[in-house]
Image (cartoon, rainbow, N blue to C red; front, side, top):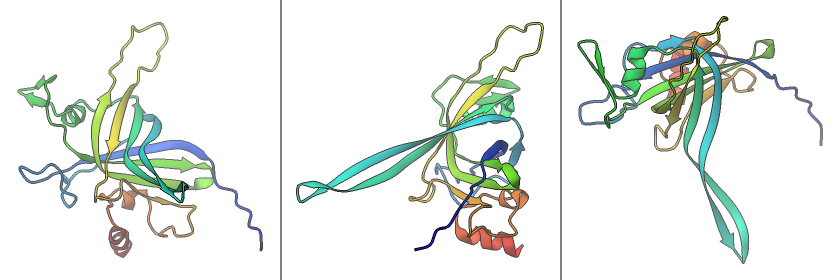
Length: 206
């Protein structure tokens, strides 16, 4: 048996975030084949903390634990940002804007949207991730009195990702992977919401 030495690249910084709202037909909550035309890119992210919400079931046989089946029910991305566009935040919250007046605080249905992130690693390596079915479940809006020197006043968006095809919660590519699709860069990967392997094939063909 041989030995193979690996030195994975360490994470250096978070890159851009991307989002685009789902555009289902009337009476439908989510349509994996339909998103709005414009994908928004922002460079406002300070920090992202990921929490997987799991359900685990222990299978017992012959008087002992035989196996454990784990199922990821959803994934929370707690995204600390230095700024967020007010119209997009209102839309994520399910709020209405009428004559420039935001109507909020009611129990509005929050729309689904796709959300993507970039993880940059030392040495030029990277990881690109799409979460095709997300909702904003919580956000902070903190503000403090200005002092003599400027200090950041950041907000946190909790973006919850659900299974978008009944099985998967996210898709990603990693430049360190032996199966990395050469030819896919950030611009191509985030030019559309990726939901299946054929999407990568189409991007390479384009």
